[in-house]
Image (cartoon, rainbow, N blue to C red; front, side):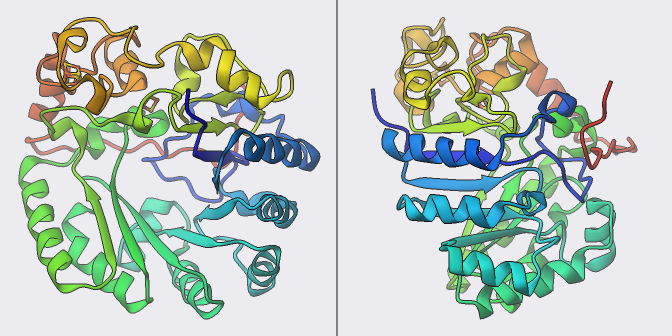
Length: 358
Ligand code: SF4
Ligand code: FES
């Protein structure tokens, strides 16, 4: 068994924004008992010991953690490459300088669109200008900057303008990330899924930009439109792990929704969870696979797709991801894609800023 390479540290699910495409869990109230600073220190130390090389500090909005500088300091001290994944709300000059001093290596700032009105409408609060200011500050302080835009039906037609904006702020990399339908995004899927025509136009813009621009342009088509599923997480519990705000350890951020036994950093050491826990071993390797994956020559390429998506779409996490055209359940994906070719007038449900008690 390989060591995990990357740790996604979801420091909190609280967030000043309320994007309807958020992949945080719907049941955020289960995550209010956030790990303390010392518990995160211990988690990071155990992750480094286990072989983790990169720590992605994410959320929610990680800047809402008052101890973010201490957490970065610990991760950097352990030799981990640290990446802050942020909406940039709360990224003041003082905080940025303290993070720089603590050893933060990279900053990824999300923006909702290239135009202030649309960006603010999607984010749920006036935030566009603060994001632009933060991106400039990231560059001024010498960090590599990734600009991340989650794409969906309401902003995918603006990729050319988004790329212009990323160029203007001096981004090193732009991540055009089609919405992944988990959590709140799953609830809003039918209002977010773009049409085939929108995708064709987006791809043409991306192709042209890749030839012209020196910055990296990352773009992956939404898997609903692919013939084969995405190799989710590079395989279940293969190279990545996630620690949720309450210390739950998962092979991916969406796996909390699966009916699997829980494992927590509060009860067990990370190495033991990685190696022996039922949640990590549930879909490791290829032995668990049913047909058609069991007899398919792509099983080591896409690992049967995404377990969380299989569960969402079929109620059974061990089935072939219905995105695959060979899956017996592919019709559920085909129906969603067919609906997306028609005009859509559905309202979006924004995610709440903080977990709401039931
Ligand atoms: Fe991948 Fe399974 Fe589809 Fe083969 S049948 S392409 S392994 S999802
Ligand atoms: Fe959980 Fe794909 S998101 S396996």
